[in-house]
Length: 281
Image 1 (cartoon, rainbow, N blue to C red):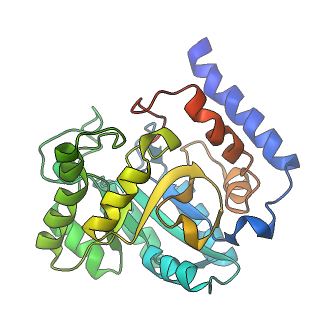
Image 2: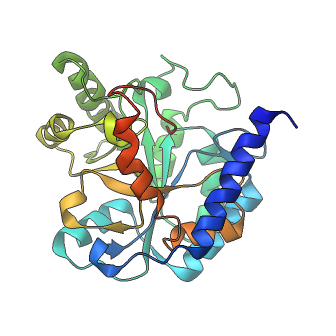
């Protein structure tokens, strides 16, 4: 196996070993309510994808051990201080067509709600996010179908640019435009946002203030963590699921045993300049 291919495997083994001995997070860190982040669910392997059988095992586990809520409901509970122990949320980023083809039937089978954050220029066919024809966008009809099935639709920017440091006109395009487009297409308010890439250098207080001004009530990052406080609703932490995560790894992640990664994310601004591409979508 080439060295480049071995590196992620070694990294994942090290992370898993640390997770097995790392103590669970304490209550003082906020309410335990893992927000799980997926991108693609497909029988065709990809860097962003989870195989359907693996996804189903994860959803079966999550709905057995947690009370899965729509994201907007969790936000309401956070603000009211009424989050019940063992709550969880399922989210998808970008808006890939396989979310409808493969993820939707599995989630319906388990009565599991979900939120999808879409890049509107991607849905409109104006940009390509991944140079892989299998990872095409949802159609507007499919998005409306997801909404009818109880999914929540949120914005993931217009063209998937890093938001921090953008001029005001570009920031408006990335934050206000998707809200306008989605509300026109869906006929209802869109109040949830997910930052492109979503690490600490990718958004700041200026970004958050613009979200508030536009009418968003909460935003998801990809900063790691399973616990949340009301003060963090514009930087909600998530658990990113990778294609090679087996059920044991998934279980450790949602129960907070990977939360040591939070410390590494705090250090990330030291080696990444603002606006630099990150590791997530």
